[in-house]
Length: 573
Image 1 (cartoon, helix red, strand yellow):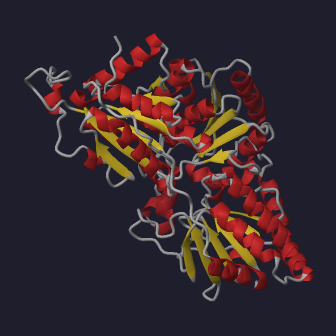
Image 2: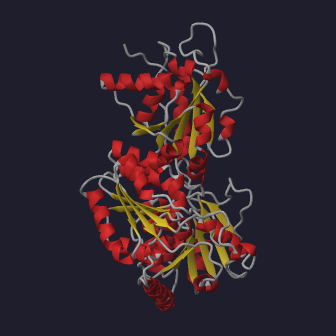
Image 3: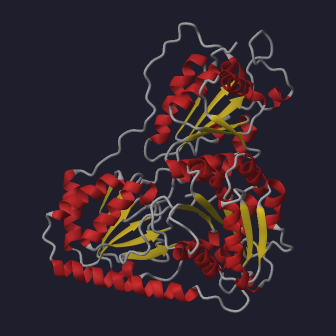
């Protein structure tokens, strides 16, 4: 007989909140969940589907990818303190990327004698009993709680989801000992109306709307800088409408999603760690920073001192960053879509001369053309070496409007963002954080969220290794989530070398052939995926082979319905 327990109450709450998948790495603490899932399957009771994940990094990355594409939080189940600690890098990414996820970890049983179901019966229950399991993640999650009774499970789960969905979104962490998760619900447990939706977003105050609109109307070179306004497709379109109507330029700084069409004449490019200046930023007299963690790097490139700056952000204080500041005249914690529409409406009544807007537009379009011509020149292959620019351009020409690209190119972040020519909202994502290994699991989650889409994961060879490819491709085959993965293989960790040269350009490291970041002798990256998940695997070493390799790999993904990995050998650093 199926009995309602703390575990079944948890699964019911997840299901009622729209959670489709539980990405799980199961352990001895999950006996109640395993039994409840088996009971649901046997009786036809609705419940989230279980996705078995051999590694926790992949589990949480998959949940992140699903939520990034769909906007719907998914659940991750891990094993006591051990599994919680194995989440570390992925937890950093969902926290910094502001992605809603529910994480549940069991806890060692709290009883060793008596007749409670779930009491200690394995030696490991003593070893895995730690002082403050929730403390392991408290610096990264928005909410943490330990279930105290089966009757509190549903209420606490919905409360956690409300935190996860309220901007800035983020992960939440729940835990429960075996006795609680195995305990039956009381006969008199009342079913109460509970809500899990996030809090309503904020709008700009009316006086702020007028002030910002007036500054934009009177500006000669108004500029918008953003990093993640496109997390909301409606905000993407609101930004396009505002800029098109009033000839405002757009510059991306470390973009973590698609924010503005790259073929639009008002698009001025994306900035990362470049030391050189930017003409649009240098000329800007009014800047609107919208949803950006690092709109510029003060030591490398920054606005003029007399530039008027307004900061609109879902998290303008950057609460989780000990050191962060944007020298803005005014800062507002607001929803970007709402604020953009407010500003647009206010500007409709502003007396902006047509000649002023025409001159703005012509100047920005001139910068846009210059950039486009420069990038196009870099896409021509030279010699027998594959360049990342050529590889990305060849891929771009084969992508359709249903493609989702996940970028973890690290040292090739700028190249990928430049040469993909992103045009649609929710067509491009990065992790939003700095822990490598996200893209493989995220591709699985993205494919589950958008089964008809072609999912492409672009990764450096270092981040590929850190993504647990054997786990990723085993899951991809088992759960039928084929995707194309392209390894931008430059023979090691290029980014640490670039960082060192930026600080010590003429130092000993600049003259050393080996500073500890090379992957010589190189592993057969694609062969790992073939062995673990039956993926189409191919190493590509010459420019003349790139297009045929891409065609064959996309055929495997789209027609044969299996994953494909191209290990593309670029110039070694």
